[in-house]
Image (cartoon, rainbow, N blue to C red):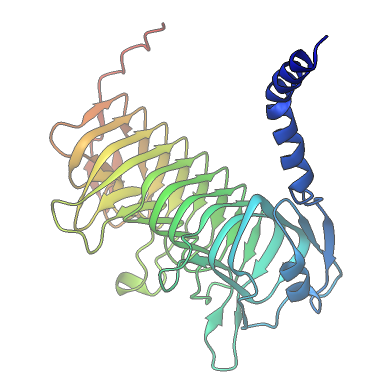
Length: 357
């Protein structure tokens, strides 16, 4: 073999091996992957533990002492993004409010929040996430199996998301509090399999929030209105668009398989703007405040196979109220007798059978 031929073959081999060599060099130069770590935090080490955590880590809230002083606010998790999500697990009791802002990628599991009064007498507690000062928009936050306990006097909210994307609440148990789950300017949310009872006001309030699901929840309101006729005005699930003009829309809401009963309204969608692409299906309500199911205005509204009853202590008969053009079928409003007056109820035509592929 001549020297010229050897040189030609060497060039060919280098050309063929170049991609593999580039990959090997890139792997060698890349920083080592973060090893997912389980960290244990006590009330005194929580801030340091959170600061040291990275995406994919799990923080276990350990010990028997409650986390946070009653009536205090904890802001120890802010301006952080975790991918995969950071997981924080109990069992643990939290006496302070957790106020997190500009945070993405978080899973919180199996902890209990309690509502307490601070030194000034204000009620404080629960879990809140917000976007502040134009910072990172909160996203990909899940709450799973949490418990929220409060006396009836508590005026704080159990859960609140403001200006966030892709958030979920699953299997929560909420007792007391003013509002259960408050969603303000949220895109992509789900509240599933949760139970709320003995609250002052709404179980779920959706304000200017789109693309959400309420499914399989159970709301038991009080048998009387807190504060009398001018007091709280509770709803099982309220969709509102406060501050919107009549041309602004809330879109993509699915309300299915929920149960609601007590001195409250069921699922009213009302206020300043209108609602598009709303499905209300398979819910059972026994309400005492008139609107079992209602949508003020909108397009592509579907209500099917819902059942509405009027509670025996109601101030007005409950019903189903939908805008012109809405699709309704299979709904039943049961007859009611209030103050000696009979209300006949109604039944829609059955829904057409689903057509398979």
